Every structure is written in structure tokens, then in C-alpha cells.
Length: 393
Ligand SMILES: *Cc1c(COP(=O)(O)O)cnc(C)c1O
Image (tube, rainbow, N blue to C red):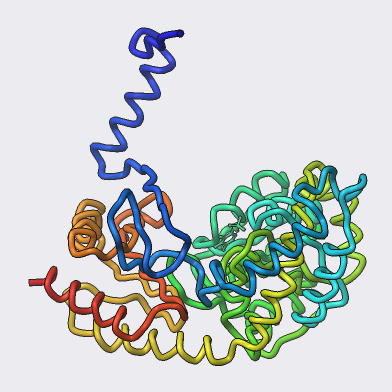
């Protein structure tokens, strides 16, 4: 048995000092372990909780029909894909799902990725490079920020939702390809990007629009078709991405666009080419999930009612809910330690809501990120409202 004398090895001491500094600022992160499936009612480290922090917006992550579909998929396809898509890992289960997804969001073609994070890295890196420019909302998801850096394109970040500043930046850029990238629903704020205005700017400046609809797909628009359906917009200039790990309840992501874009990704997106395909059984489960999403108007209506109930119930607190009509309902607290204290106060009352702190959100805007799911009941939401009022006293 070897003993790690971490204290005596300089690089380890440095790491520990950095972690200690984080802790002193109320920024140290750690994990808690669930021992039950994802749902509003979970057991964490042996304690039962009512949880408001998953992205399982339709309550599909543990749905009996998806469990059955995955089991059937494993029976048919086994467990692993065994190779990358371009070698021998592209199965008809993947292929069918891609066609279903493209049709569902109204695009000619779609491509599956292993995760949303990898889709973002791959798309931006494949479509732009040195000499090109990426324009990005300052509150975009971390994976989009990483994608810009990886692409080596010039990056210009505009203030959240500021179309005037974006127009100005676009006007300054005379050479190279232009790609605007944005979250459709901002993951830590819950507000929706002005996609119509963004598309108009793209047309004016001959740019592409890359829309990351991680939190809109399955939730927004007719039949849950996502943010583009929500606004009723369609354009060849839009490259659409959604994760299959949030409302869809499984894992993975897809990009939907013109065929020439998809062909480019197949050839140039490193996070597509140099990785093993997802297990084909997941695609079987996802085809079933897509059906549940399309038939899920009842779930989405229930979710909307819960959102309205929460906003009404929390309107008289000393802290304000941010402006959001989506399932992401952040309660703005401000100071890191107070956000943590509130999160701990809820936990003591058997309720789990994550405190989100910098660098995930800007300094001074620590918040409780409350997320609602169609799997919550009105009583669940009342319990949260009651607990927050107790903590406000
Ligand atoms: C969650 C998320 C991702 C990453 O998706 P994964 O499938 O979890 O890797 C990308 N973009 C946004 C806006 C997200 O919220």
C-alpha cells in the first residue's frame, strides 16, 4: 500500500491552498450522492428530500415507458456501440433517431452527439476558425464559451440581450465568417433570447445563428418542438442544437441544420469524429422519449400552472424571483454565503434547491436556482413557498 504524503509535495500543497481560498469565499463545490432515481422525491446521503434542482422538466428521466424502451434497446443492440460513428459505430437506431429529430424541429438533417457540451465544442470548432468571428451573449453557457476558445476564431461578447451592441459589433466586422451563438433559454436566468431580432441581424450582416436550446427543447413551442417553434421562426441560417439529457430525460444531444452543415460536422467536428458513438439502445429510448414529448401537452400545461403558482406564492419575499416564464425560476440573493445559508435552511426543512455562485453566475448575483418539473405536484410547490416564507422571517 502506498501512502500519499500530499502535504510534502509542492504542487499538491498549491492545489490545497487554492481549494482553501475557494472555501473561505463560500465557493467550494462538492457533490452529494443520490441513492434513488431522479424525481422530485429523492434520497440523498440517507435523507429524503423534496428537490427543485434537476433539469428533468417533464419528469421523463425515470418514466416507465422509457425504462421499457431502453431495456428493449439493450436486448436488440447490446450495451456498447464499440466504435466511432465514422468507423463501425453508426447503427440504424442512431440513424432513425436523427431523421425523427430533424423532422420534429423542422430541419432537413440532424446529427447526434454524445453530450450537449461536446456538440457545442464540435459545431463551433468545425464552422469557424482563424480569421472568422464569433459573437456571443455574455450569459451563454460555459460550454459555448469553451467552444469559442477552442475554435480560435476572434470572439466578441455582447451584453446580455443587447441587440444594439451586437449590431455595432457585427458592423465593425468586415472579413471572415460570422457566427452568432446564444442560449435559447439562459440556463441560470431562465429568460428567453430574442431569437427573432438575432435572426434579423444575421440576415442583415450575412451571419449564421447557432441556437443552444438545452432548456427549451421538449418544453417550449407546439408539441415541445423547442425555441424555434415558440417564436415560429425558420431559416437556413439557423443551426439548432438541443440536449437530450434535460426534458428528454435520457442523455446525448443533436444538431439540426442544412445538409451541407451536417456533412461539414461529420467531416470536421472533432468531438464527433474522435469519440465512440453513444450506445444504440439510448437512441431506442430517445425515440420513445420523442413520442412522449410530442404527446406531452398535458405535462407542459401542468408545468406552466406550477410556474404561475410559484411566482404568485413568492411575490412578497425579501428576495426577488428573476424575470422568467420558463421552468428555471432563480431567486436572486446576491451574496454567496447568504445564498448558501438559505439553501442549507431549506435542506434542514427537507427541501433541496441548489445555490448557484460565481463563476457560474456574475459576482454579487448568487441565487437559488429553483427548477420545476411536470413531476412536481401543486402541494410540492406549496411546501417550497411555505419554507421560503419561514426562512424570510
Ligand atoms: C446543460 C447544457 C449544456 C450541456 O449539455 P449536456 O448534454 O449536459 O452536456 C449545453 N448548453 C446549455 C445551455 C446547457 O444548459
